[in-house]
Amino acid sequence: MTSRQRLAATLNHETPDRVCVDFGATPVSGMHVSVVHALRQRVLGDPDWRVKVIEPYQMLGEVDDELREALGIDTVGLWGRTSMFGTEGRDWKEWELFDGTPCLVPGAFNLTPAPDGGWLMYPQGDQTAPASGHMPRGQYFFDTLIRQEPIIEEALDPADNTEEFGLLSEADIAHWEARADWYDQHADAGCVLVAPGAAFGDIALVPAPFLRHPRGIRDVEEWYISTAIRRDYVKAVFERQCEVALANLLTLADIMGDRVQAVMVTGTDFGTQRGPFISVDAYRDLFAPFHQRVNEFIHERTGWKTFIHSCGSVRALLPDFVRAGFDILNPVQCSAVDMDARALKREFGRHFTFWGGGVDTQKTMAFGTPLEVYREVSERVAVFGEDGGFVFNAVHNVQGNTPLDNVQALFRALSDSAE
Image (cartoon, rainbow, N blue to C red; front, side):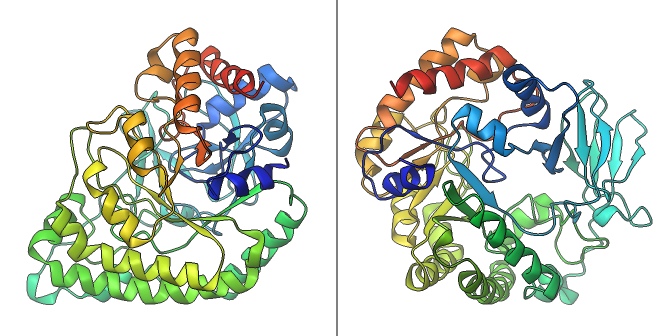
């Protein structure tokens, strides 16, 4: 099978020739740039090669064509024009992480020193605006800086929380058309689209690190409180967001056509390590109607499968995810309560393609031995891969402190499982 055929079979719950593998197609299934750099050096050599940081918020590294082929990765991703900090992937320049990793960053990746010896990042690279991100000294990625203006209850306007949701501009459309042309040169690969503007209430997006001067409710705690005490306000925000998202998805459906096989709709987290972050009733009232509208629109207009990312223990919400129309569940956090791999496959394997869950990044990948990584990967492939419906990925992005020997053990286990 080609990689595209392998992904198609997997999404149709058919058994492919080997497990389909994704690293790098989405912002929640990638690898830190330091890991990509070290892996590329060991696998391919070329000491002068610098990996591009394609998502500067989490400092995710680009898995280029040569490395993807060498590792047996099947997927490529089609992402929007700008990053979480509002920067565009162009005018690349050299930079170096605290651990000495050399890399390439966008031209608008503009930093100033932070008081703790770390770095401050600015929205759209504009250093006249308040900093919107902070990388502590010695660390691997950025934390969002909250820039909440005083809240005047009677003056709250849902439009302030929707200024970032607009129809695709001419520049955006040109970008997506170029991505479609790029994919035509990679048509043997599985194709994933990262949809713009459909992640209702994604807490990484609420503070808007990409806006120079965000208005509305932008504090994380205040937003979560608002989902309980200002629910009409939040629904008004979601309603406007949904209208724009559907219009943009229609445009993207016309541009991309049947190139796309899966679309990442949302990255809103609904689970913690110990249980759901939200009650079932609250999910049904606040989120499910919008998820259902988006999924129905995509399924009616395209043949794309819809992808929901939610960390943590979401077992109690899975029947509602099914009713809302999601086809793909990510990251499948098996270390969380009620998220046993065998039970999930048995109960929901006919409903979801499980995308992730292949190895625990919290413990096994970062702190286990290569043998422990190899065994866990092999076990998860056997469990989730039975009768298809499984795209291998780790439980969320592979972090910057991951030992290279463990990363190689992961790919060795995948290679051995295909024999």
